[in-house]
Length: 129
Image (cartoon, rainbow, N blue to C red; front, top):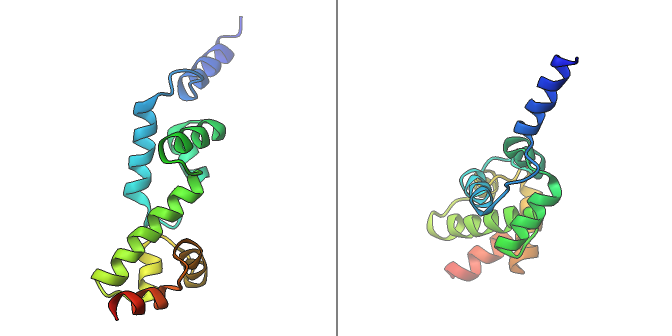
């Protein structure tokens, strides 16, 4: 009776599966985050759109795999990459912030201090001597 509606609903079920989200999908999401941490537009919303998963499912799975919320995981990954750049590649704080996906140096410095206890400059100075 309503063939167009039936097609739309069936298409929606295929695009937004309610069941079948499994470990393999969670690993794909984590791999995506690890490969795209330097993109400042990486966010929970962008991940939800890419993987057609509910926000609660995404939060639950990332927490299960990492012990952190998605935002905390993304930020901690970015900070770890930043520490490496600051020490081993001798990048400036500004350059490091952008290479690690932070849209502002100020926000980067705040997050860096929150995670390490040091500003990026202090960390670099203390580690390099």
